[in-house]
Length: 85
Image (cartoon, rainbow, N blue to C red):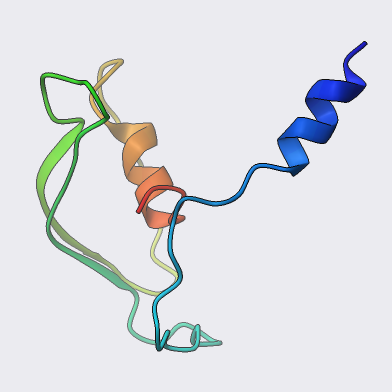
């Protein structure tokens, strides 16, 4: 009964578009990741999940995301993983 859902899942096409000339992913990571004035708002949401984020995550650096439910922690991780465009 759930095989139809399974097959439909694999037919989903990504909504994130690949850049025309993407840069190769550095291996190993030397500079880290920088967010400069990054914001994200879900469709049909009144408020922003994240707004005006500015930080650099350096190579091998470990951080902890702490905050109340709905503060945007998971959204931030999904942005870092490019699950959201």
